Length: 341
Image (cartoon, rainbow, N blue to C red):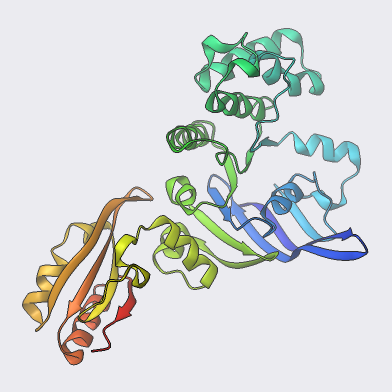
């Protein structure tokens, strides 16, 4: 069931006599209960997009429908009430330096007019949820980056939202802290039944917790779908570049000087295929040899996921048969380089 529906969304800015098109007709649907990732380079329009969802930015045209209500045609009072359904986490935390962790979490509840007793109870509950029960009286300057973001997450949940918007929520954090924050977001989403929209410029963040992903470039959605589909079979060049950043190629890249004797290929394994002896079967079935140059295994969407780069050596006819065999197993294969010998 769609919780967020974006239709024909455009956003333009006037800058030094010029018109800047930040969004150029974006269509997007986010289903209830999923974590939806939007990935793009700096300036692609992803931050503008997420700020249009909660109307921190007013769209130039198009519609943003949240839970069946069109935010683009709401008056200020109705919009203020609708925004309570959406909590937002920011890249640089945006905490009030003069308030304690508890005070920061309490702030949106105070604005909403909750009683002091209800606010105190909710703040204690949320600080425990994000693992900061013992930091209630600490000020932002006394907290680490990860702890600040945990306060930001607790604050975003203060008014019982249905939707959590994450604007580059981990890009200011180190890798280990990023992993813990993403795990926290996923756990909270499952525990509270939230829908999460997460924007990032890192494919590893997408593969860590997202169900669906949209790739944005120059204000347009250029590719979208399930994370498994988009990651294993990317179609747009920008998507392929993002996948490259998440898969180490090291000295298998042509620019590192490796000269293949046959066809240098990368094979992706997902699910059960990750545990199958595919390469040994390849050698037995066809008159080819394989030089394994690189291999890695991890998890994608809870399934085993691996990549392997091999030099497939043999006559072209045999190599083609071997490649057809891999295709018959439904394994994504990419040719990286071919011998000119």
